[in-house]
Every structure is written in structure tokens, then in C-alpha cells.
Picture (cartoon, rainbow, N blue to C red):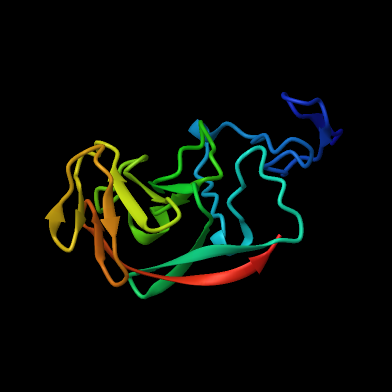
Length: 174
């Protein structure tokens, strides 16, 4: 079968490939597929903001460890970074998103964009994004769009999906 071309950048690809090697465009119609894309957060580093050109400097990073249903996932934050927790939306892929589908997110009432966890240099904050089934810290419901401090060991619940958060400071070089 002849190679097909990416609709975005016209790079040739072979049948069966799901993502363009050049531009990252999804090469299938997500509305007609049952393919689930799973991104390992250990392989993704959150990007620094434009203009940050610190080379060979030691920077502090904070690792947020989320323990969900017996599994543990790690997200690495630098000052000013944030991650949306929710379910994947193949129509608008976003690298700064953590997909909870594989943990039963859909069945447990997790919205596509449920809440956002951010790090402001001194603390982690969680903000409910006006989700349908609410975001809770230690069983206390958060007000939508109001950042709330997140502490080490807190129980974070999205809909009815409960997870425990742990974080620590690590040193890294750029």
C-alpha cells in the first residue's frame, strides 16, 4: 500500500501509524476509533516558559507523586508550571494534561478538564475547573475557580476517584 500524507505537514507515513513523526498530528479520526493514548508522565518534562534560557544552572524542581488505586504516578513541576487533571480529549491534545481514564476516571465522574494543579514557587495549588462532580481535598469540596493549597499527604478526590498526593524537592541541572 502506498504511503499516505499527513494532513498537517504533508509528511509521508505508512498505514497503521497513529501519530505523524514530524509534527505530532494524530493520523486517525478519534471519533471513529477506540484507541486510547497513554502518556507516561516520567517521560514528559513540563516545558519552561518562553524566555527561560538558564543554561547549566541548578534549578529546583518539585515532584508530585499521585497514588491512585494502588498505582503511583509522578509529575515534575518547576515554578510557574501547571497540569490539568481530567480525561483525554483527542480533539484538543495538550501535553500539560494528566489523563485519568485508565484509573476509571470516566466511570467515577472525572470531567475532561476537572482541575488544575500548579506550582507557584512555594506551594502546590489545586483549582477546580467548574467540574460537574466536584473536586475535594480531604473530603471538603472546593469552590470552582478558587486556588486552594495542596499539602503533602492530602486526599484529593475528583468526582468519586480518590488519590493521595505526596511531593518532594529534587535538584536538577538544565
